[in-house]
Each structure stands twice: as C-alpha cells, then as structure tokens.
Image (cartoon, one colour):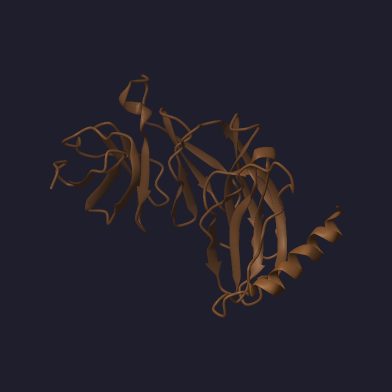
Amino acid sequence: MNRRHVSLVILVLAFFCGCKRPNDIVWSFATPRPWVLASDSEILTPVVDGEVVFFCGGYAEKEGSAIYALDAQTGKPKWQYAVGSCVAAPIIASGVLVLFASAQHGDRIVVYGLDKVLGRQQWKVELPGNPRPPAPVLVGNFVFFAPGSRSVLRIDVRDGSVRTFDIDANVTVEAANPWVTGTREAALFGYGKSSWRSRMDSETLESGPPLGEPVGSLVGLATDGRTLLLADGDGNLSSFDLQKGNVT
C-alpha cells in the first residue's frame, strides 16, 4: 500500500469515527519522521518573539532535528535550519537566535547564531561534547554556558566571540555537577560548595561565599540575585542565601 492509499484510509476512518480536530486547536505542526520503525522524536520548549514561534525539534535518532520559525497565527513555516539534535531551547537577543545543538550523537556541542528573521547563519562555535550540560543562561548580550566541569564560557550573541572563565584548576568529584543561572545584571555559576558571579560586560570573576551544602545532581534552579533555589534529583528544594552561603 503506497502513501497515497494510506492517507486515504486514514481520512475515511476519521470520517466514520467522527474524529475531528478540537475547536480550541488553532493549528498544529509536525516535524518530519520516518513512517516505519521510527523511534522517539524530540521537541524542546518553544519561544515566542512577536508574531513568530521558534522551537528546536525533529527526529534526533538520525540527527534530523532543526530549528523552526513558524507564523504564530497560522503555524506556517517561515524558515528552518538543520542542527542535528537539540540541547537547549532557543535564546533570542539583539536580533540573533542562539541555539545549542549536538552533533555526532553528543560528541560535539555546536552553538549557532542565526538571523532570527531570515534564518541565516551568522556565526558558529564548536565545543567538546557533554552528555548532561546545564542549560545556557542569557545576561544582556551574553550567553553563559558550562561545557564541562572546569570552565564557564561567555558567548557574545552579536558575533559569537567567546570568553572563557576557568573555575576549576584541579578536576574534583564536586565539579561533576556544575550549574549556571543568572539575573539581568549578572551570571551566577558554581559546583559543589563553590560559587562565582560575573557581572554584565565584566572581564573578571567575583568569588561568592561557600554554600552551606554541596550541590548534587540538579533538575532545576532559579535566582533573584540574593537567593539561589536548587532542586535536585532526590526531590529536594534548597534555598541558599547568596550573601552568606547558608541554607535558608
């Protein structure tokens, strides 16, 4: 049975079973995937910018994921850009869409800077692979990202230039769980009981107070610059006073 016949059968079954699209669904969009023996596809959190929806998704098993730009009213594609597989949701600043993707099944992390209107590549940065990197954080025109346990990178969204902040001269067990978060004015990052702050446009690091407890395997975090909230894989939520370092 060819694809045309399969489509016809689906339409006939939908007609007789009364299957209709719910009235509250304005549009839907499906990324391409194989018809036979397809494994899981992926889609990360979408981002809405004006009248455009951006998201990364697709058939990652065969490195078929892409970043898509869709019309927010109709769901029609404006452009798409192949990236392999997705690492993090898109970040938008200064007219540039920044996307973290992985290539060669995680052997490399590739950061793309795309024109958000046309989808054209403006710059690209390749980094060593990391199976579980923390999510990148936007502070002003800079994206902070921890590719591994020994450093945090600051990537300028305007031109892709990279500044490296070394945070661990000697690899330790604690460095296996680096974290990165931020506010409008600064990025905060650390591992174990150690923490640092990098203010927007600053070329230096400020050491923070040691945290009262070492940070374990994280599933989520947030900060307002004064308090750091950390959620771990054991179901615990801890609040740290960033001025004192103690658990509040």
